[in-house]
Image 1 (tube, rainbow, N blue to C red):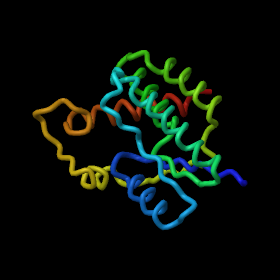
Image 2: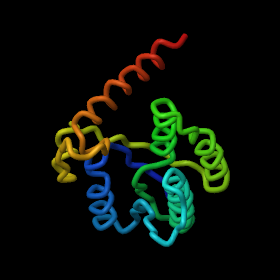
Image 3: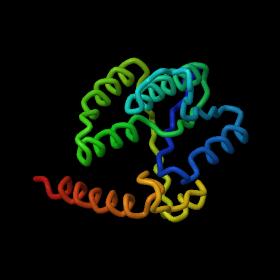
Length: 166
């Protein structure tokens, strides 16, 4: 039996990863969609939640590919690594090294996606699709305009630093 392929769908929240994955898995019998594994019974600290979720997603995806199914994966380890790298850079969380170690073990055991598709959408559209509204009453990055603008400025500085490294 021919093994299936893993295709990771990447993009901002609200960019359409879940809708595309669900649609294609219903339309094509040889496709399965593996969403973010959400389990409230997992007693995991917030910063490690996505690491565990990635491991569970990859294990589930590999079971499908071994049976000949192609898998659409809602995000991959790249999102988790990028998230932890940025958190370390912006807020000194010191979580990237652990994220990298867990990711390396997961990939060694289950392999990595065969393809990555990044869905590009304007951030305003992502906010609308997730029905998010800016409010100055909360300090949450995705809901507070001031926090979000500050995050974007810091991201720009980090990206310039990365691009200008020799």
